Amino acid sequence: MTPMRIFRPFAAGSVGGALTAVIVAGSALAHGEAPADPPSIATLALGWTFEPAVVLPLLAAAVGWLRIVRRIDRAHPANPVPRRRTVAFLAGLAAIAVALLSGIDTYDTTLFSIHMVQHLLLTLVAAPLIALGAPITTLLRAASPDVRRRVILPILHSRVMRVLGFPVVSWVLFAGVMWGTHFSPIFDASLENPAIHDLEHALYLGAGLLFWWPAVGLDPSPWRMPHPVRMMYVFLQMPQNTFLAVTILNSTAVLYAHYATLVRPWGPGALEDQRIAGGVMWLTGDLLFLAGLAAILAGWMAHEKRQEIAVDRRDDREREAIRAREARLAERLASEREGR
Image (cartoon, rainbow, N blue to C red; front, side, top):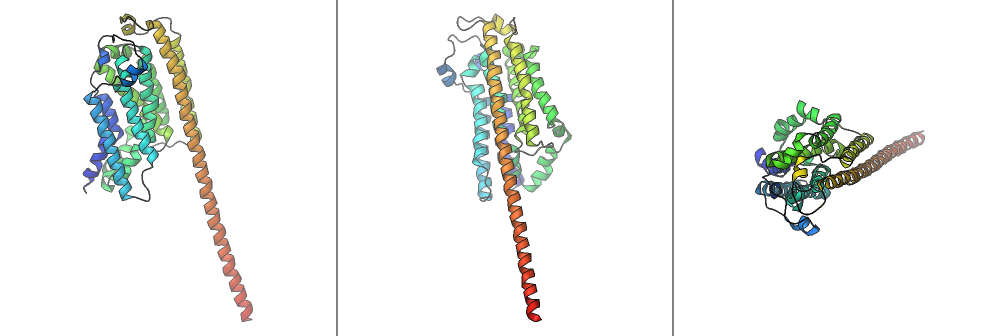
């Protein structure tokens, strides 16, 4: 099998496929006038749209992932891809689909609070789930030695990736995207222009993937952080999320002209809706960060347990070696006594 035949299926199922889905997503129905009816659990859960530029890449990513995992499992039956990684990766793709294809997308330019849910799905749900799938590790396992040496490893070790993967840079980029989009003309422009809206989604997902990459720590990275540093890295992101949310919550004026001028006969006023959005970002965002911290803590404890087991096994081997030497010494001494 040629290297490119191994590499090509995974390319469809990698994170790049998910990113492509967001970057090239076509305009959604929500970019038009306000829907005639207010959102409900039914409309949000069942009001799905078919956007080929989103559906097809996500479907290709899911199918490609399953095919490449099956191939790895067949080639390495003693060391298959952990099922939890497949579940996490597919759940991440599902979160992107919910954010961009469900009823949430229908109302994102009508209600700021719904728009905020969409952004949280991309940054704090889809991104960490995809990182938990360890796509880079899976790619390295699937690719041939030649593809790893000529393509993947040079990219991972490139200067650009070393800069983007540096935890301080990824932390600042994540915070900068959140503040820069909410307090610049970009946000209001995205509500009026589908292309800018799609670019904004790509920024959120891309910044989220960069942020969670070193925090999850399953994939190789130019910069590895120990678990205590990972905890601090994620924990410090919570205050900026809270401060941004409180700033939106306490604003006395509508921040975006689109929402202020949008005419709809139902739902809360623009300022009240903005405050709801701030509350959603504050409470839900902090809960998701706490969930991330809990996951890192669980991983830390599991890592320590594995280290203890490894140390115990090493000590057992050393004790066994000592006993073997003592037995040989005893046999030699006994032989010497008999010879006398």
